[in-house]
Image (cartoon, rainbow, N blue to C red; front, side, top):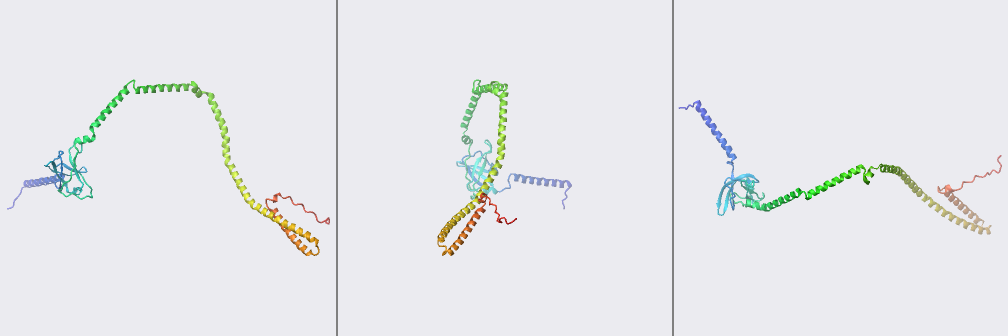
Length: 346
């Protein structure tokens, strides 16, 4: 026999199924928010006191939730904590890791803080003990901050400020006296400025004196008259220096050319002296040969030939001396040639 459902029964069934699905979805979302579906690794640590830690207290790494306190039990003289750490963070629990209790504020709720060791260190196996580090209490913090000494310094500072305020408010105090001196000095400066403006006193007369201003202007005019020629001379100085440099260069060039000519003249003079000595010897030989004219005719002819050669050499030397550009300008003009026709031509 087949079961037949009415429309109302079908609608109610669908509604119930929908409600169940919604409950399951809500349960899954809540479970994810509460980390019901995460895998945890349990570690153990202990402290000398509980610091107000309870089950489900957050466990943080770098102030980020990575687990929670599972149980809090008293074992002997110490408080033992079971820490449930999310499995994905277990590799960060390495040798050198320490557990301590911290608070986000001075009076906030405490939480378990994990200070990890080096990443290169071996990991602590699950279920093992993580060493703890005692947490500082409020009294320890106040002792570290030296609250008593700081309070005394603040009291002393307030007392000093109060004393300074009284001195500033005192009409006979240093501030009032300084202000009085400043006011008096300002009045004196104003009076001096007024006197200078009105031409009073030596300084005022000098400032307001028309004769002094005219004298200064006249001296400035004379100074301009002196400066203008100096400026003109300064402008002409570079061309004059250039001309001097060019003349020096020309003198050096003439000197360099004259040195070979002087050396040549010295050589010519030496050769002329040698030739004159030879000519003197020849003359002496001629005088000796004249005694024996006939036997020495042949020798005299040879001697005369040598004399002729020496005379030609002398003439060449003299001509070379005449052609020298240093000597040629100082030689007398050549005499005009004499007529040799003896009146033959009409």
